[in-house]
Length: 80
Image 1 (cartoon, rainbow, N blue to C red):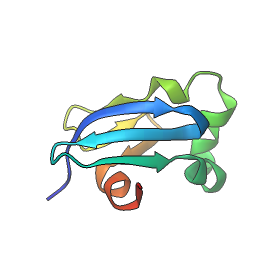
Image 2 (image 1 turned 135 degrees about the vertical axis):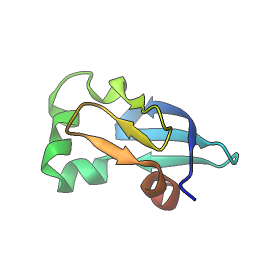
Image 3 (image 1 turned 90 degrees about the horizontal axis):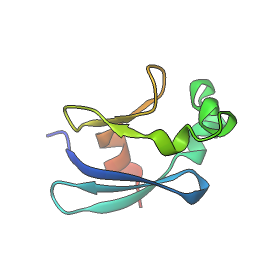
Image 4 (image 1 turned 180 degrees about the vertical axis):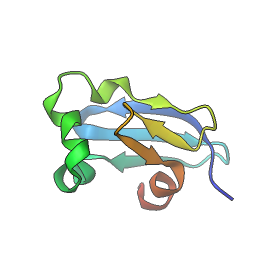
């Protein structure tokens, strides 16, 4: 089953605080993705973009624009 996100909050240093429906809360470090995935580099280059993170309608993905998104199962598995 794909974990559903209840709430996502952008934090300093390119971290996301994510609360899931099952009560689990994680911090996911997006900086690792910024350093390795070309399309994610815009999150560091474009002023304020990182703070505009949104939760998709299905609550199984967060996104910033049509090129930058992050699935909930990745956040759930790799968040600390």
